[in-house]
Length: 458
Image (cartoon, rainbow, N blue to C red; front, side, top):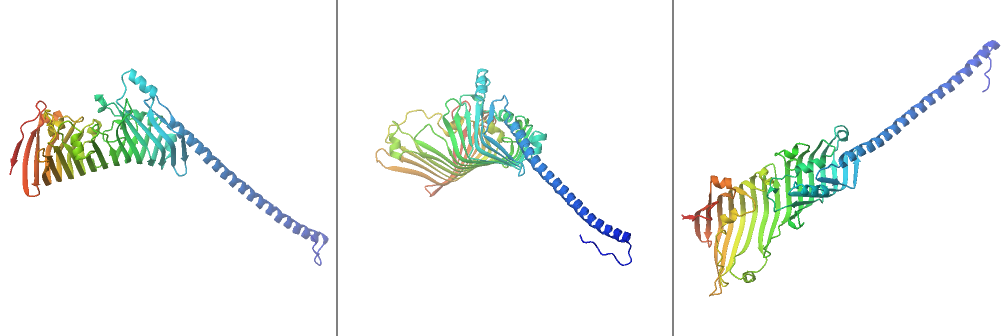
């Protein structure tokens, strides 16, 4: 740095001091700049350490949470059911838990031991789920309180198989919720979810011994609301399968019939728990042979049935009775229907007794208890067609726009002991010309077959 010129009249010492001051000022500026840069470096270093620590903690916390949840969920118990799955992953930031290829199935060793001990249940379940997503997961509760809490569970394409022993009478009293609860919880104290949505599921009921299909339904959807699984909810009668609310919709139900001359189609089923109502779009009993072929498929005269029921609704169903395999409802309404019966009198007459084949007797022989206080038919069409053996022609007896109400439709013994009369009120237009108004009283007797019905025409 060039030396500054000494001012006139300034001593050497004064000039030296002035020069020294100038140099010191320069050195101070450099030192201050160095110290400021050093502070900035320390600051940047500190920020970097914090960022790295945060990333490391998030990664470690994710591994910790994942491991804790995985350990908690996958814990095996000594109960009847076991849970298997391929992969469990958690997006802790989004609060989403994803599980692939889940199977809830009976433990065969436990089940066989229960058979030997004569404590085997009459109903078994198997659930297969390709993928399950839980949204809105609160991981802190899973770690600290041993609880899984989420906002929504989504399941698509599940297969639900129900194995039942039809030879046992205790199937109605058995509720599998207790056994499933034990396995679902594992180490958890509670599982709580706002809604569970299951779409495009297949439900199959099978014989527990042969595995043969009893009934199946396709494209079934379930919407569970306010789901709570803990040690007490399995016995809570106000819940259905752990949920306060349940909506079910089903596109089609296939029910194989022993009589291969008919096919039964059930479509458009929907159940809502908030009003305990069941609606069915359509039920059809379809003969598989034309009238003439059907008549000649029997050695004697037989009626051929062709039934169609549309827009069916059951109101105020008793949910608790369903677990006991009982159908109890305040009313059942069928808003449109068609009943066609055909008989060929050219065939040899059927000499078998008709006792036990009247409507109320068939009701008594149903394999499950029924109590419907009012059964209502609206806008029905009824046709009886008969082929005459001599003329080789057919005549028809038809009722148009028939409306009927049956009260006290039941086969339960306690209800019959209280009131054993089933009353039919019927109105229609005979051949679409003559009005008909009738009242028929039928006796549901536990001892006798049928009482003589009384019919009044007004």
